[in-house]
Amino acid sequence: MVYHTLMHTKATILALALKNDEVRSGEIAEKLGVSRQYAHRMLGELVRDGQLLMLGTARSSAYIHPQSAGRVVWKFHRRVRNDHVSEHTILEEVERSTQFTASLSDNLRSIFDYAFSEMLNNAIEHSGSDMIQIAVEKTASDLLFRIHDVGIGVFRNIQQQRHLKTDLEAIQDLLKGKTTTLPQAHSGEGIFFTSKVADVFSLESFGRKLTIDNVQQDLFIDAVKPSKRGTRVFFRIALRSQKHLTDIFRGYQTDPEEMAFDKTEIQIKLYTLGTVHVSRSQARRVLEGLEKFKSIIFDFDQVPTIGQAFADEIFRVFKNKHPDIIIIPKNMNETVRFWVERVAKE
Image (cartoon, rainbow, N blue to C red; front, side, top):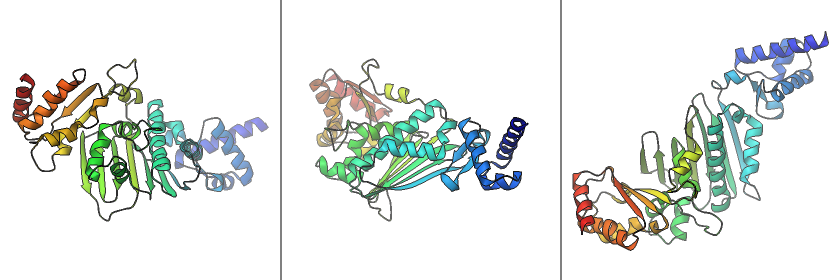
């Protein structure tokens, strides 16, 4: 009899959760005429059995039916002091307090774990910020997170450490991959691969914003006002995404068996700044640091023309100096193709 009553109570709770999108212990206690402690215990057992998902902690907890997960907006907001904190402990707290990953596909779970950990680690180890703000949200269609620090700023940090002239040059280097201000501790791959696996990814720092839209296959660099101190990271991916982290990695490996990040793609339009490419110095800026790769794709999308000297420096001089590096130009119009093919024959 007791067992039957218990099962009936749990079935009633599940039905309420499915009907109302979410339930709370106080609501269950009032609805069933039981104590709040008893309702809380029943909800806890349903969570442990995987029949409900818990959002929040302690008295603020709400419980949802897995079938309602796609309709419910889940939020995790945390402000942490950057004092011996680690990204894996915060990730565990996110998962423990929301249980949102329980309803994610395996591929989405691995993508989130990787991207969130890499971006939070950057804030912890590179920003010099005393405080870090974290927000994770799951909407009906997307999974996203934001990380905001008030430190030195990602672009300024790279600019200073690599002795670059402008924050734009820092962005250019960042997008090549393997750019880090702590080479003894980091490979410089975190931001690069996080930006590739997202649907939309952005970095905003001191009035400059880099946005990479992999859905539209485009990227943008904008001036943002008012200028905010530190770095703001934004990451969004669709819940229905079929992306796999391993596939993204393989896309930048010349030999998947070696598991080496040795292939990159350069967006030439980032070096345009409203001018045509005519000088060798411009080409050398594009090529800086690329000798570390085995395969380089040069994307000339939205580049109207280039000069002979620019093309010669990349497709003859650099190629002759590094004959083992594979160079692949793409998205060339007729003018660009003319200069690339002409210097390659010389």
